Image (cartoon, rainbow, N blue to C red; front, side, top):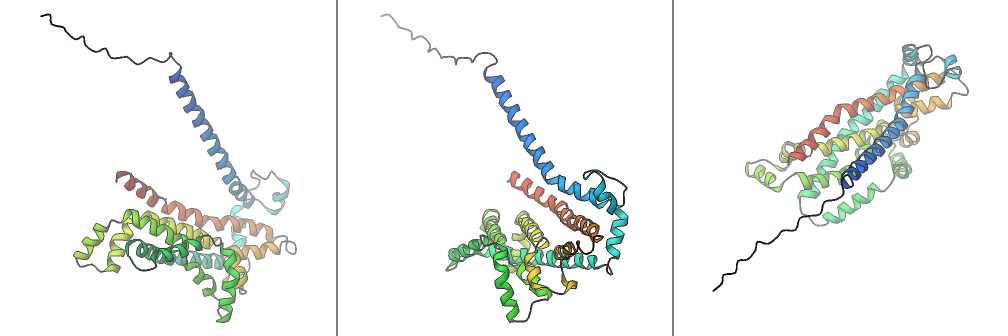
Length: 305
């Protein structure tokens, strides 16, 4: 008998691409896309920062230099003199407006964040009749612009005699449909049911479980809600415009608008409007920078999970 030996199977070697073809094309595509992305970011940065730069430069000029010098570069630096003139004008009414805006935006955004977080957490973690219908109604509220609600709110507050009061601006700012939506989505994804059950077994009530367990896991979402609501209330203009008549209750946005309407009668007030606009955006920048680390920690924790 003749034994037949099977020859080992030959493995087909993959064909090599021509030298420099695929590798160089991949590097070229990566470099081109990276260059385009950087160019877009540079253009966007200039687009958003140029008005702020102009505002800072214009705030440092005197009234004469404002119209006779280059708009994007400095002349005689009079920033601190302009700030002093702003604070001295009409018994420091601008500081009163800043305090009103801080009250409306700071306290209003904090309470609105707590209410939105509690509502979103309840919709995400509790089962009850009409839950999805309620959530859809809240979601529909996100699509309604705030300006469309200003006139109905004015009619409601006028019926109870609450117009031209702090409550006319403060109470509507406590409602955040977008905050409820974001809280529900984030609570469903970041708060495990096992942790809630463990807290209940340990004897914690529902309120304690929410404030000691859920809020820590939902921290990035809560910071996002607070920032969105803070910026929205701080920049709110139309609602205070129709609600308030007393100048001492004005937020800074409405106060600067009133001053701007008087520029034709009082030309010297133009510089105050400009420097006031610069100072009014500083709290927004500081708030964002101060809370940015919570976003970063939330993204890092999400990456570890």
